[in-house]
Image (cartoon, rainbow over all chains, first blue to last red; front, side, top):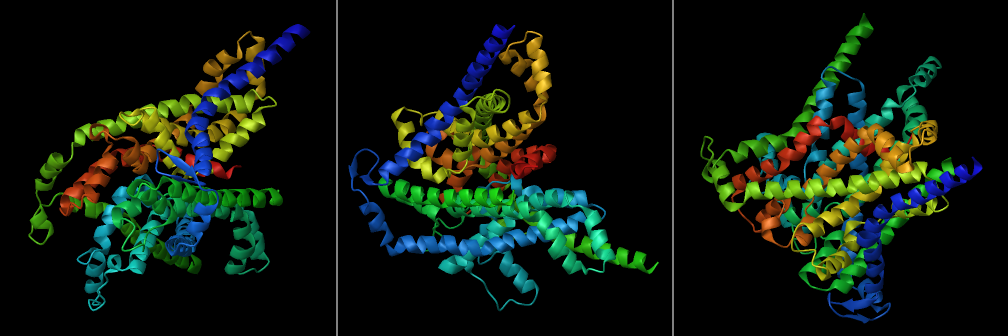
Amino acid sequence: MKAKRRDLGHQRRRVGVLFMLPALALVSAFLGLPILQAIYYSFTQWDGITAVWTGISTYSHELRDPIFWRVLENNGLLLIGIPVAMLLPMGIAFLLNEKVPGWKIFRSIYFLPTAISWVVIGMVSLRFFAQQGLLNGILKGFGLGFIHTDLLSSERGALLAVSITFIWSMVGTNTIIFLTGMATLDNSLNEAARMDGASNLRIFRSITLPQLQRFIQFSFIITVISAFTALFSLIFVMTGGGPGFGTTTLEFFIYQNAFSRGDFGTGAMLGVILFLMMAVLGIGQLAIMRSKE
Amino acid sequence: MKTLMNMKRKQLVIFIAMVLFAIVMIYPFYFMINTSFKSNAQFLGASGHSFASWHKLFHALPVGRQLWNSTVVCVCSIIIILIVSTMAGYSLAKLRSKLSWLFFLGIVGAMLIPLQSIIIPAYINASHVNLLSGYWGAIFLYSALGTPFATFLMTSYFRGLPDDLIEAAICDGLSYRRVFTKIAMPLAVPAVVTIIVLQFIQIWDDLLVGLLFIQDPNYRTITVGLGALSAGRTTDIPVLMAGSLISAIPAVAVYLIFQRQLVNGLTAGIGK
């Protein structure tokens, strides 16, 4: 009997390792190896065929390049849109949570952009912001025809147009997250606080928000990750990174360096920088969660 | 009585606000549908609707072929993701050993790697082993990108299965492999559906991987075809809208049918 036990334990471990192997092989070959290569090639001059070791100089060279900082500035400016991309869905989730008649249909409508590709979103958005587009049509309709917008033709304007589109398309995902959070709220706390004479605002700040904290964190992470790594297609379709470098974010700059200019070494280096930024974000998030527990 | 009146008014205000939001969210779809049924002249001012742009679209893009390509890429990638992630998830949840935490760390760590950070070396590697000529380069990369989160999801799902169930089956003489295929997998259907829906939408909608890893235009997916059409600066907007609409329909259909599973998947990372 004991021998059989040991046998089973042995079998269990063996099958356990065996079952991990396919996932491990796939992830190592297509994610693990390339990230190590990217780190190596970031210290070289690389055209895709031959790589010449240049050490840290790729980095120091890039850090002195004003275009690099211009690109990072664009990423920074995108961050400004993040509070909006979170607060708007939070408000919508609160309204949905009131469960007025038809709320389920509204919920489906608000989630819809989640299923649409950035390519399609970008294409429609392009028409919205165009000179003869809907935005100017609406302004005219409200008697504001003298404000003729042409966002896409200026650097800052184009970035604003990309940000607005980004916010619009994050509404679905973030509303889902907050709505899920609100379903976990303990309403008896609100009742008790109200009995004690607490105002609605006070209840929201001291009772609702703390309960939603985990969901707010999650939404923040998802939104930042999307802003920094999911907008390639949107930018590709809407602006191609322009005008100038107006809408070139780090992820788009990687693509441009490698696949438009053939400078794979710089592309790999920028990829490593993006990876480090996301890793800091992820580890920071984990640390915050751990310290709370 | 007064509170009832207030209640009703409050509800009415909320209802109106939600209708306004709904218009903002749904207008692009209305615009897409409406514009696609106009010729370019009609879009630019002439009245009426027509099928002219749809005819043009089918000339400009091999729509049927590209829809088929998208389907092949999605289905193959999802099958690979499901096979490797259910096995890994089962192992991490129920067949724990000293190595498990290391595997788990590696898999979760891989979730932090942005696609753009690995795409250059991955592209060069794939070209060295001739993976760029057909579907396979894209399929493998999509699978690798989808596996970490799918494994994470399956692990937490299998953790919810009672250990007694597995113990009992083992005592009845089933091997660990049989327990996986005969007991664990049938119980995992909800999590599997969530992964399918999430991955289908993600892969169907992707541009970057398809753009780089499928070099033969005959194998292009519909999203890439559309992206290329727009980057070619086709100025015929109704044609682009018709293309957008047809490329969006499959993912939207999946979303409408499996909303609940999609929501489960999107919120799974928060944990309980």
